[in-house]
Length: 91
Image (cartoon, rainbow, N blue to C red; front, side, top):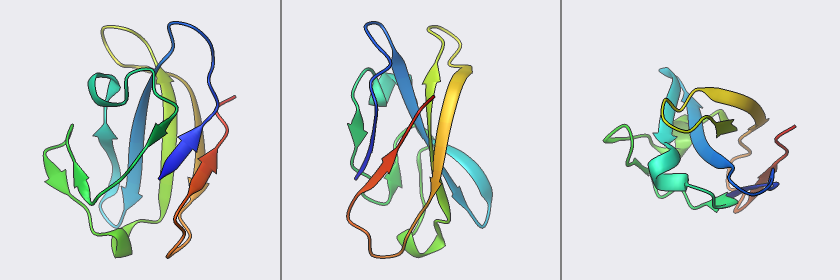
């Protein structure tokens, strides 16, 4: 599970994963919405693909603009193998 701080009312978020193939938008604003946590199960619904946990190196959470989903502010952290939770601060 990855969690992050709430940037206030109306904020929308997206979760990206970095693996051997680069950054992948795993959960866009239609999936993460205004939640402050996301449980990664190995499947990226927004990319309609899967990434093995063993291939992950970093996770990034971005506050995104309504409509186009462009990042407004992002925080990221290294993925630590076998960690059950990861907290990220979005500035």
